[in-house]
Length: 141
Image (cartoon, rainbow, N blue to C red):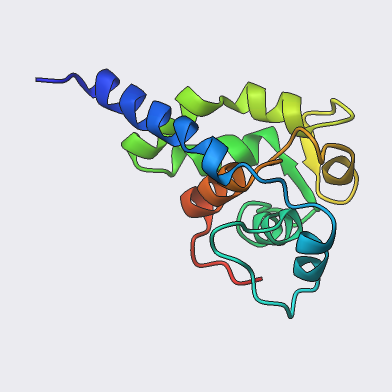
C-alpha cells in the first residue's frame, strides 16, 4: 500500500508533468483582454490580474493591498491536509515570498511587487490555476 507521502509526491509530479501542456505564459494580446474585469476569464488559464484581484478579495484580510506572510500562512493553514501537503511539495511560503516579494519586505504588494515579478510569480497558467483552485475557486472578480 502506498504511503501518504508517496501519494502526495505522485500528485505533485503529475501536476508538474502536465505543466508543459499548460505552461503557456499569458502575455501580450491573450492576457490584455483579461485585464479588463468585465471580460470573462479563461478557466483553463486565469490571468495574473484576475488572480491578483481575487487574492485581494479573499486573502488580504486587512485590505492593505499587501499579501503579508502571515496572511499567506493563514490561508495555507485553512486548506485541507492534502492541499497543504501538495502545496508544500510544489512551493513553501518561503519560496512563494522569494518569487513574488520583489522588495523583500515580507509582504507581496499587489500594486508594487506583482508587476515587478511577472516572470517569476504565478508566471504560468498551471500555477495560476492551482493557486485559484486552492484559495478562491469561486472568485469571479
